[in-house]
Length: 315
Image (cartoon, rainbow, N blue to C red):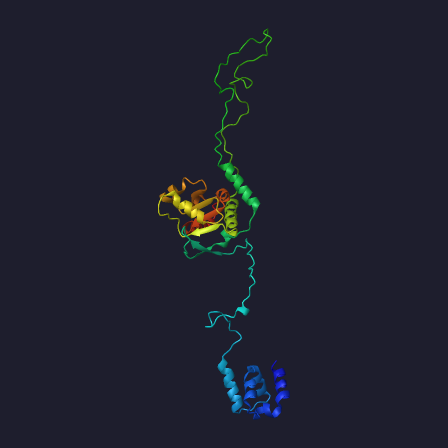
């Protein structure tokens, strides 16, 4: 670029005017508007003599103090930013793919939507790959384990009634029977009926722990995980929680998770709302997370969950 400009100057003004023998203000102005690279190239080839005009041009160029690394911003200059340089196109940032075990930074707020800083979520707890098969196994284990298993029926030896033979064996024309407490009679026994037992199935601890991580990661990827500084409410009135839930967008069922123990005000404020439930951090489970579309956790609850997930499994 510098060589092409120097050749144009030679053709236009001749060698005598460019090589330091020109005093025309118009030509000097054009020379001063050339780049620093041109002045350096001309001086190296011996085309520019160290006279007063070249010194004046060098000092003028150095006084401009422009750099190619300078970024022009609206705040850097006192004048308004040129509107023709602003783009009207919407800049689309690529969505982050979950499941890379990356630590996440999430803003911390409260019920009044006030800024309370930020919090780092552990990537090995809140950013694990989503696996529906693991969630299905954990939910099935959880629902089976919570069954009471108190169902019971009476056998023929336990049912109330006499053991006398109702009628003689032959001669009556009726079917032969030895007791009226059999399963074919009203009020009789139940054959092969259920007895009290446990419906729990075996599931490894690492699979249960992985299911909870997947559930937390799914809510985080959906943007349905909110971290509050604390879950303190001003009073035990239910209307406070109702107003807080109305301010949240696209929230139908809300699960509040706080550290141990749950405050009495929060219990009283949420006990009459069927769409708001409260759990301590020790009681957080996969099925409860899936039943609610929005999960709200306090700082203390997040720290307790991360500590619980990082605790080695006792064999």
